[in-house]
Length: 152
Length: 185
Image (cartoon, rainbow over all chains, first blue to last red; front, side, top):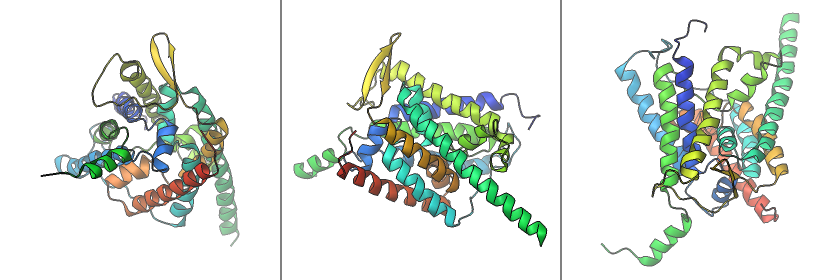
C-alpha cells in the first residue's frame, strides 16, 4: 500500500469529481427526484444507474483485452464478483426500506452535500450510525464464533 | 411513420423532466467509475466509505479490515462532494448552460457568494431514519447503488443483479406506502 504510485490518489480524486458532478447533473443527489421515481411520477432515474452501468460494463469488458494490469497499482483487471448468500437479500431489503423512506443512497448523499444540501447531514449521520451498528454487531458475533471454534 | 399523439403524450407524462439530464448524469457517473478502474483496477463503490472511515475511530474487526483502503476512499468521497459543488457552481448556477439540463422544480434554491445552492424539503426524520437503514442494509447486503448498481451490473454479476432487484423492489414498495400514508415531503 505504501509504495502506491504517486498519481494513485489524485486519480481517484478526479474520478470522484466526475462521479459527483454526474450525480449532481442527473439530480440523483436530490431525494425528491428519487422519491418521484419510486412513486412513478418521473421514470427518468433508471437512465442514471443503467447509463453508468453500460459505460462501466464496456470498460470492464474492453480493458482486460488491452492491458493485463492497471498502470497505477499493477493489479490485474479482473471481475471481483461478490459471493451470493442470504445477506444480499436481507441487506438489500433493509437498504430498500431506507432508500424508499429517505430517497438517498450513499454516493448521492456525498454529492448532495456538495450541491449545497446541508440537510443531507441527517442522512449521512444516520448512515454512519447504521454502518456502526451492523459493524458492532457483526464484529461481536465473529469474535464469538472464533472463540467457539477455538474451544473445540 | 405516424406516431399516435395520445401515445406520445403518455410517454411524455412518464418523463416530465425528459431523459437527457438523467442519461448525461449517468454517463458521467460511469465515466468517473471507469477512470478509477482503468487506472487502478478497482471497481469503486460509495458505501464502503462508511465502514472504512469508522476504522479511524473504532478498533472493531469489521472496520479494521478496511484500513488499507480507507485513505483513498476518503479521497474518493471528497472528490464526489467537490464534484457536486462543481456542478452547483457551473450548471446549477447558470454559469454554464446546456439544453441537456432540465432544472426541475424540486427543493429550495439559495445563493451563497454567487453560487446557486440547493437544499431538500424532505423532512429530517425521514433522512435520518432512512439513513440508518441505508447504513445497515448496504453494508450487510455487500453494496449500494454504485457498488452493485453500477460496478456489479456493469460486470454482469448475478449477486449484484439480485441485490439491485431486491433493493429497487423494496424501495418502490416503501416509497408508495409512505406516500399513501400522506407523508410529504
